[in-house]
Amino acid sequence: MSAKSKNSKRSEPLDPARPFDPAILAKARVIADRYRIVLEREDGWWYGHGLELPGAGGDGATAEAAVADTREALVAVAAYMLEKGERPPAPADEGRRTEQVNIRLTSEERWRLESRSQGQGFRGLSDYVRAAALAETQTALAVHAPARRPRKRPRAAGRPKP
Image 1: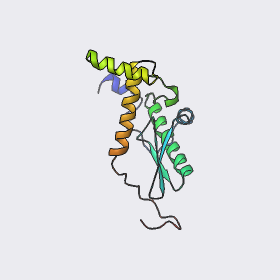
Image 2 (image 1 turned 120 degrees about the horizontal axis):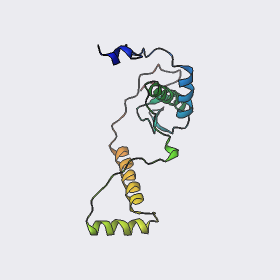
Image 3 (image 1 turned 90 degrees about the vertical axis):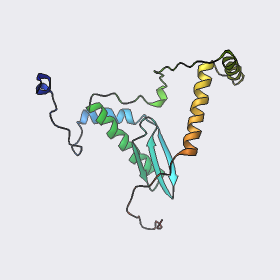
Image 4 (image 1 turned 60 degrees about the horizontal axis):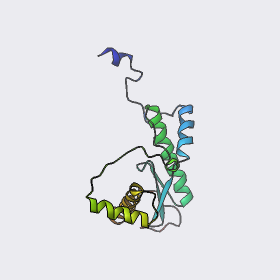
């Protein structure tokens, strides 16, 4: 075993059932409270997932219950990331763009895209391309998204059999 491994704070994996440190949990709650939640309704049941952390999801019989369940999942994921020394994603409303992508175009392609971008009131070609690509991606995801299988839940009184 290396000296680095001997001095490591964690020699065993963390027990997922243990509670988070209260300070980390409080910080995670502040972060997760700013995350956006996307809600969908299917077969009379509400499902939510985080916009910034799509893997964190929840559900409920009402939209409010699904939001609360999803929010707790977002807090747990953010707390876990903080605990591991990782930085949770910034809330979408901060709008920080930290990634850059370069694309090669022909002169004609650039002219056509710039004309279209100006005609639609965009500040520049990159804003137009980003908006168009993201809109296309959202449409494709909505059209091609696989059917979600609801988690098995105890049947509430008055809830019909599927």
